[in-house]
Amino acid sequence: MTTAPTPSATTARLEAVDLLRGIIVVIMALDHTRDYFGDVALNPTDIVTTTTALFFTRWITHFCAPVFFLLTGTGAWFSGKRRGPGANSRHLLTRGLWLILLEVTVLRFALQFNVDYKVTILTVLWGIGWAMVALAAVSRLPLGVIVTLGVVMVAGHNLLDGIPGESFGALAPLWTFLHQQGFLLNTPDHVVLVAYPLIPWIGVTMLGYALGSVYDRPQEERVTFLRRTAVALILGFLVLRASNLYGDPRPWMVMDSLGKTVLSFLNATKQAPSLLFLCMTLGPALFLLARAERGIPRWLRFALPYGKTPLFFFLAHFTLIHLLAVVASYLRFGTIHGMFESPSLDRFPITTPEGWYLGLPFVYLMWIVVVVLLYPACRWYAAVRATGRHPWLSYL
Image (cartoon, rainbow, N blue to C red; front, top):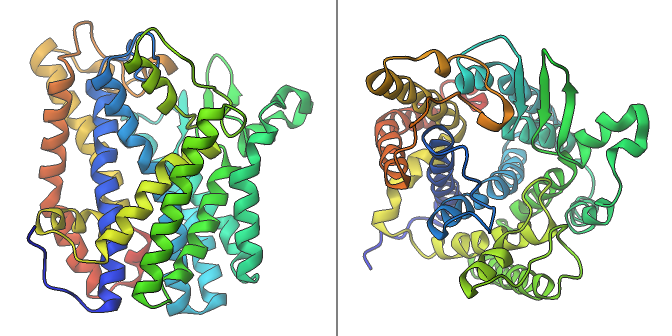
């Protein structure tokens, strides 16, 4: 396999992180393209009714959120090495609050093309923003304390699964905010749904911060650590999942065929992300990080501009996908009103006309179109950021 020339150690470790982030960004776009061009009546993780192709189209995108949160923490460590502890803590706080603001303004508009706020779903920017705020509060603690907090949150939060939010009475929204996906507000006029409960995601971000310290070690030691941790996570997933004893509120079951039984085994809970969901996704991600340090294959280097501009791509790709949906609606049905109105939750993010779904191959085609169209913009923006002339660009 042809690889690029071996870079310096510092460049190699940063490019490894950018590569993983870039691959994840590209995969993420597939899931969001499916949101707009897929069939809302088909639940990809309903083992009884899904198809293998649809299940794995959704399953592969499960890797995105855990890697985003993990590398958010890792990036915070790198930032702290440049800025110093105090300045880094302030940067994490302000950037975290900025992401929360983007979630409820720019991202919400890109998703729905309206500002009526009838339906608002708080998604990944919301989660990462609060994770940054939490990391700002603990980043100056001893690293061992941060690791302990992260492990407890990730490994222990499933112990709380049996506690319903209603048991907290007036404080139930706080439980939704922290642990259980649900509504912060649910009235006939306005709905606010928390899609990313915070406790486990904050834990992943803290562990990502600790992972950044591993990049201060020599390369051989670092790669060995990444590989061993990856193996431990994958084996932990297989053993715990097979036992059905702990780690996921939804046990796997023997189905009427081997194929569907495998799907049930892999169908770990994303929200809130179970321990097994995180082991299943972060283990392979660490393997890829270790592999990337040995040199990035030329055919994978296309992902680097996306990995260097993740927030820019995130906001731009939602806007582009939605615009493509508007064009498709007009060309096929002569109407676009459903592209601009707040949908019901079961049709989020847009209200599509009858006969909208053209099959999974068309979803993949539109995904490729989106990724290709945004490549020049991401490459240009990565070059602009690399000049370092505009420090405020670190917020986008």
